[in-house]
Image 1: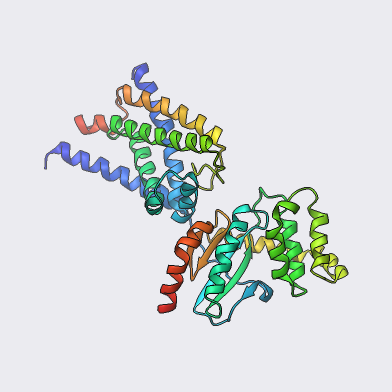
Image 2: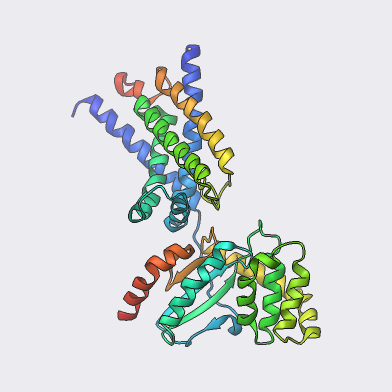
Length: 150
Length: 207
């Protein structure tokens, strides 16, 4: 493996692991708890809050595993980048509007971050998504296996 | 089906299976929770068709905001619902446990609701390092037998009771306060209770 492939693999694994942890901790809990946090952000219309609370953890889980395994790697990296951009926008808007969040909701009830910590984490992960998107997925990926077989 | 398509489908299935599997691992074993509480923390007819269980924390501002929609619901369905209050003092709230114990001791003298209302109404006043003197002044205002109230607060059974209710909450996957269960259906916070509680109760009463 080249250095570029190593870097891309490390970036994929880091972002994927965070997304899987975040998605699993929220998907495992009741959607109402996550809906409570989402509604505190006040960025999604009220009627869609429960739907978002039910779907978002599964999107995080699927994209996270896709990154770890290198499945549709560029698409998964782009999707995770879009997720982090959305999270950054949501957290930033609450700070600008002076909304005090009970919890960032990033990891369900597992880990509580302040808006500043969440902003920093999401920014770092966004940079890693760019690495994952811009570099080839390499041999340690399902993409390579799908193209060439074992 | 060509080999590449088969590999694509297999890879998709693997990603989907790992997603479901990791959720199941995170979920662990769900356990039933007990809605039981002392009689002085229950309101409404025992055989009511609708049971509302609240997990709450006296120091939590969101619990204070939920008092109004909850009161409106209980007034609207008076005689048709049973309400049970369960303690869920969050670790981050330093004064929530002493307040819960103080309220329990008021309850043993038949004044739980009076003390409960006062704690929420004056939350901003007592939830600080002067909590002890305010909790005592509320007991005086509620005309409690102060000797009995003070000795009750030292009862080692009360911290154990709080632990048991925290365990009930953990078994019910309570993550935020207030969390309400209306005939087992979860509502988190005053918004969910206010927006969907009435419709749900109407449905339950029509069953």
